[in-house]
Length: 227
Image 1: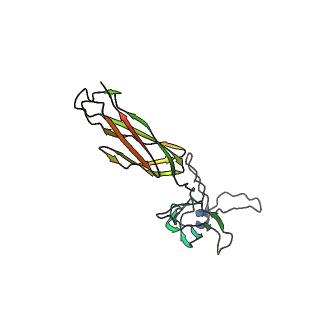
Image 2: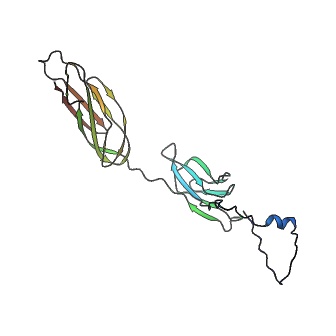
Image 3: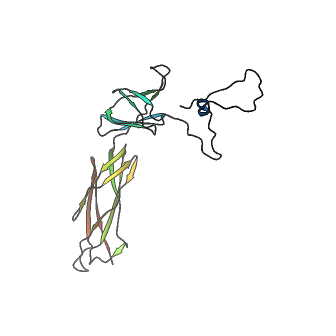
């Protein structure tokens, strides 16, 4: 804490030369160099983030005075001090409401701030899946050789979060994770190869795929267009 010493002249004096005692000389305010940035104002904050389990939080303090003593109160009680950057982190405390007390002396004139909880996440529920894209490049291909066929699906539902997809075909399967945001999100491409036909007079090759997510699913049969 910077201590500012204020001087008042009780009687007008004419002073030609004054030598300040060392203690007063050290207390004189230090002028900021022209163009130098002003010190950032303190802005203590306490934020709660989801911990490593569903029943725990991480407590994160920032913006405090360097080395300041703090008292964290809530589902757990923590008496500590912040580091020289004015920060402190405690991982995996019990979930609940928390506040932080700081400043003052002997519990008098203390300030208090509430810790901000993370936004509540709505669980994801997928109600419908539609395989909306099925194509080759170009649209008309040589069916005597294996061709790459691209599929995409659109998921519809509620909530926000990761969804595990299960793609499958006659020759390939994969389980990618989709970051779903309601009301609908398109999946990444699922690419499989067709089976070459033996003769030009044979029927055009077909590719069958299925996709699952949660309790929803969709199937699609794509027939190649042959040159």
